[in-house]
Amino acid sequence: MFERVLVANRGEIACRIIRACHDLGVEAVAIYSQADKDSLHVSMADQAICVGQATNTESYLNLAGVLAAAEVTGVDAVHPGYGYFSERDRFAEALESLGITFIGPPVEAIRAMGDKASAKQAAIRANCPVVPGSSGTVENESEAQKVAAEIGYPVLLKAVAGGGGRGIRRVNSDEDLARNWKTAQAESLASFGNDEMLVEKCVVEPRHVEIQVLGDQHGNMVYLGERECSVQNLRHQKIVEEAPCVVLSPETRREMGEAAVRVAQLVGYTNAGTVEFLLDKDGKFYFLEMNTRIQVEHPVTEQITGLDLLQWQLKIASGEKLPFTQDDITLTGHAIEARITAQDPDNDFAPSTGLITKWCAPGFGGCRMDTHVFAGFTISPFYDPMIAKLIVTGRDRDEAVRKLTVALDEFHVEGICTNIPFLRRLVRHPRYISGDVSTAFVPEFLNEQTVSV
Image (cartoon, rainbow, N blue to C red; front, side):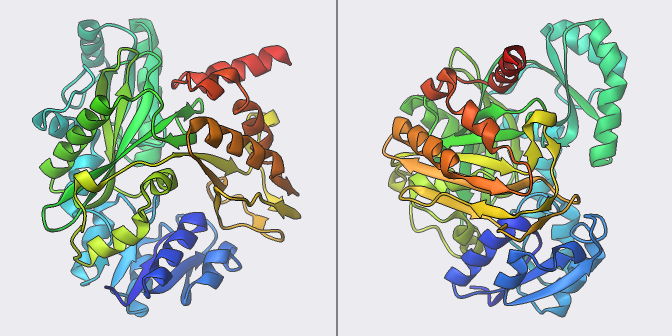
């Protein structure tokens, strides 16, 4: 096992990684920006080093600064968390050149899955169902219209290098495509430095279901069930996630899990990763993409499998073998995660900043809180608005939904606006309570709220 690990991230995931390190007897080194000097992850770490000014580009995305911090502090390995450098092959490669272990998949796997066109090709080679559409990058608007004519509208324009819901446009006609083509390219270029696009059939009102995989460096790989991530905002960003998926049969779970393992093994994947699928109304599933990192929603998988995924990331990266096989994986109970954000739901979810004057979080059996904030913490305008993850676990989904409702009612924050009032309304909606959700649920819910007002 490593002696010292640098955590190349901030916020709740940095705290989560530090706890995993300490549980394994590993020293944790934090990096921080000047705006984060009083953050929880800084005080939790065994050592902390400033890597720059407040903005992400000057600090957490400052490649030279983060690499220098790793060298100066003499770490054996670096855990990137999610976001930032977690899926940057250049960062993993630079660490390798310094003799420092990157806690994640091999560079080649990051590259193969980081490009949506090559990822789709890998899925096809792995005999995994894919959404009909272009087999690779679409060169121009004219070619995009040809593909759309072949597969039929509606279609999605998707950034090859996309993620987090950015660089995606649904179009319903040639005229609609013409209006959105340059906009989608511009957004992709601004977000990812790449304006290459795919065109795919739009699966109408699908469920978004993802499979967690875990593979060691000795050829062993398992899937740890699935997560339902259909409750997403207008920009395809997840709001509430749960495990398992209420409509997935044991047979489909096995087929989807085995397909995910085939895709991951094809690209030589090791460590924790997530293969994402769309599940249509007929129960057919299609490969969407693979995230070559730990996911925000990983706690719900931990809750129903009893496995600490962060600890296993460290163990696998240090060379340990998985001591269990697929037959040993069992799913017990039901877990739901709600993302708590510093946003104002009554003002188009605009970011909210300022001093948290009151932080009264729920705490009872089956309730877990992953966060980095507290009363007296100042939310700055520089970073992602997620400030906590509220995770509840029940014997079944009905119990988990009840616990989530109670936990949200007990959760009180003052000094800033949060999405907690919005979540309270959402989880009481009859469709959510029944599990009748798709990626269209939140837009429809928001429209109902607007009409009622």
